[in-house]
Length: 176
Image 1 (tube, rainbow, N blue to C red):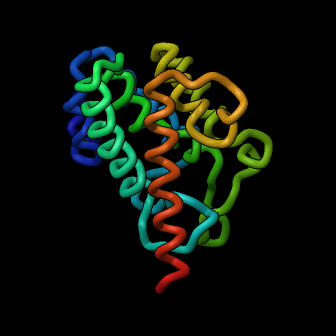
Image 2 (image 1 turned 135 degrees about the vertical axis):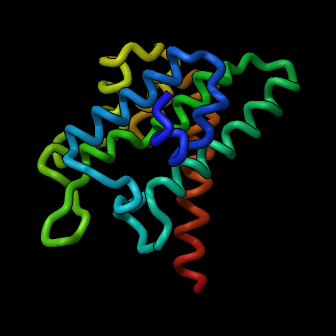
Image 3 (image 1 turned 45 degrees about the vertical axis):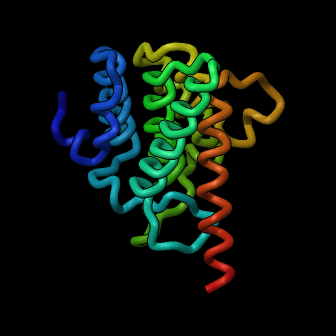
């Protein structure tokens, strides 16, 4: 296991299936390479709100909220694939590494990102690296792109965790 990614995303160690865990790291390696990034900490979690919170803060928070929700749903008798949930949480915004770029020292929408938003590019990457249909569904369906399609249970959890985080950060921005 790449200790580099585990240091950034300790939640990787919660993925029981080593193959899935490895593929999540492979997707990040490829996204970093394709997007031309050297440091995830320089990437904002969104271009829609002004905040010091970055990509890693967001991805980890969404994943941790999803893990707790997944545990509660499992206790209630619902079928939740925790490995897919965690992998999908960690990868739900990986497409932003392709959607964003830096221009004159500022992170902006890339040319690629003007044509393809991060849920789609992230899902393509996940599929390319052999992650299962649930993980691909989570990534593709986590944002508005998923509003008119079917979301697996895990995608529903990630979708709501993602929007909970976004809306609270946005509300905090206006109340300060």
